[in-house]
Length: 231
Image 1 (cartoon, rainbow, N blue to C red):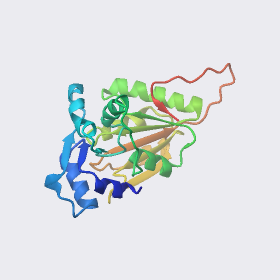
Image 2 (cartoon, one colour):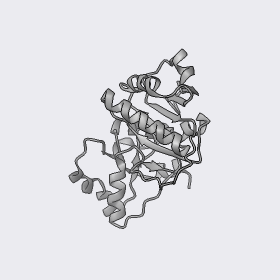
Image 3 (cartoon, rainbow, N blue to C red):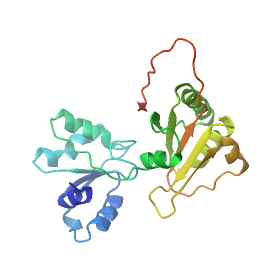
Image 4 (cartoon, helix red, strand yellow):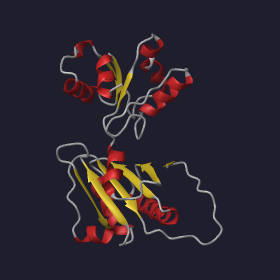
C-alpha cells in the first residue's frame, strides 16, 4: 500500500511535534478533518511511564501512525521505545517507506554504501567530541566503513569545526543540510578541500558523513563489536 494512502486512512498519530504533524497532514491530506484527528506527542522529554497511554488506541483496536519530525520513525527518533512496547504487546508493526535524510545523504555522498555505521549525535563537549571523532575516523580506516552523524542546527557549526580540525586531510567528508527541503545542499570532498573553503551552514538540521582512507590490517583479525548501528 502507498504510504500516503495509508496515512490518509489513519485518525490516530504519535509524533515528536503535534504542530509539525498537523502541517504535514495538511499538506498530504487537504481534505482531512484535523480537529477530529488525535495527535499525541512523544519526544526526548516524554517519561517512559506515559508510553502505555500512547498506545491506548492500539489496545482499543485502532491503527496508529508514528510520525518523525526528520529522518525516519524509530531511527534517531524517540519513537523506537514506543515500537518496542508495541512489539512486546504482540502488536503488528508495519514500516512504511518515506524519505529519510540519513539514507538520502548516504546515497548522494559517494561514500561506502556497502558498509556504514550511523552513530547519531556525537558528544557536545569539545574535547570529548574531538576524541570521539578521532576514534570514528580510525574505525572508518580500519573497516572501510562510512560513518554517518547528525546534528542539531545550533551545534552543527561546532561539529564541523571539530571535523575539520581533527580529521586527516585525505579523509572524505560530506556535509548535507536541509535534505528534502527547498534549500537542500549536499557536497562531498576531502577535509583538505573543506579547509580551503568551509561551507556556510543553514539553520536546518545537518548530516555529516566521513570515510577515511582504508588501512588494511595484516595482523590477526578480530570481530567488530559495537553498540552502534552497523550495516
